Length: 375
Image (cartoon, rainbow, N blue to C red; front, side, top):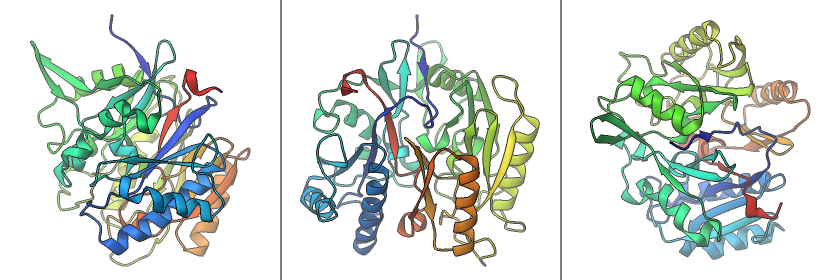
């Protein structure tokens, strides 16, 4: 009998084992030296904010470990143990820092044991290929120097296409959003795409996602609509920049403003699908628009992420982005306080991360609590 799994909503009351983060490796050629330095500082500030609520494991290349530890100690943060930020070294020199996409997606099996799913990362549709990052999900699950002596099984995602033929199912963690009660929301453009899963039928993809994530209903929103192939956004419209579950039956939706082609097209089509859909328990969706920063900017860069939807839920708090747009930042904080009245709202300034195409959710990945964590 096949093993079944459960994909938890990150706001679940179940405690987390850690939040994974990383620095870009010294041989990651996608970022210039000064960009890497600014990214390191922003990622460190974010890690420190998260560590007030959750244990953080920051993965860096071995040549960066002393610098990272020194940075945190200067600020009074521990770099070992169960409090603060724990710095771990790897020998992957071209490491990506987008842990939501490169690291495993963690699920629980029937015995509440943690498993890590390897979704066969291919550099966001082959845009940024790297054998090291492709193997990172499996590597981190086997490298006891990073996760300690905790043993986490690696589950490979694959689709049976007929007979004995199997093919990898390729996607990234940012392409998945669940309510923790059987519903999954995804964009077609980031999964049913020739640059990731050529010729894989939607039904086969759904069967594998249901098996690996324990969901019973998948809602597909278009993402990048057909005919907009010239819109070259790296993730092909990951769902975590557009739609997030606040609670079962309740979502926030990124609002980019009117007449902002093609972002407004994506927003309109997403809202249309969700307004007509029901979740796994047949509940209609309450949809709350969350205006992004920079509405009204002329010729916005499609890879600059100004979406407040890309937040992170931690124990007792919501870590949200602050972009330096005073009114938009203030409005977003007020909306989040209304959505999460029992949590502290913690804004963290993002600039280089946003210009690199992502946000707080993109650079973090949560590991559920494990039985041997001593909690």
